[in-house]
Image 1 (cartoon, rainbow, N blue to C red):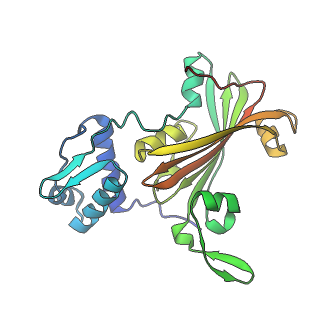
Image 2 (image 1 turned 45 degrees about the vertical axis):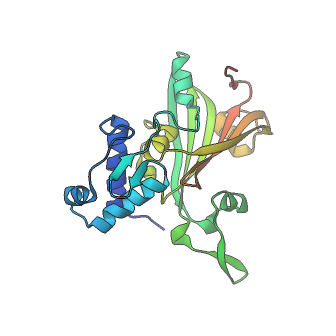
Image 3 (image 1 turned 90 degrees about the vertical axis):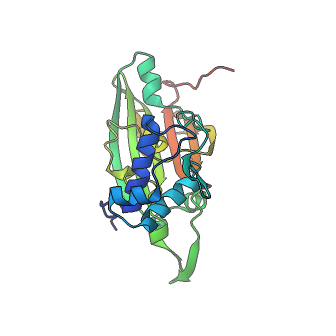
Length: 251
């Protein structure tokens, strides 16, 4: 099952507004272009513009004031509520050679997920058929990427990530050997909150192969989910070779 590579008009408008905010063209508290002006600029109906503004308002990016217009919400978007560690930045700041190697990218539907991932993304069955659950696949498409992060020629992290395709439709088209997944998501859909766990787990065979360690070797595994507009935007599982990586910070 595929997803059209043609970006919907309302999403193009959302992306343009976000680009203007991140570039500093539109500052916090500043009024943005009117619905009529945006409709003319993009050659669409005001209804399409209204959808884009409504979604960005629900995501707390914009604030719509009756009779006054639409304004950039009063918060600094370069400081999201969620602090997301970026392994690429961490390694580069430590003067280590960094490389990202994409293992796979694919579009998946609810029936392809395990129960744990369905729960995380709030995907519910709508019926039972032939002893199997039936899902509204159009409303539950996810993107899945798997990436090996390499430091000084040695695999240090294996990233497994799932993303809500409706919220970030162009995600799967990015070249993640160049673009960092977390940076891209933050730029396109400001995060509200998140949660994470860190566990010591024995490496399954596929993870061990990716990290070039022996099967069942110890790993530090960080699982993190982040939210946008009240829903899970992305869930990521990051496996780290236990003897090559440590989590650190300041209190």
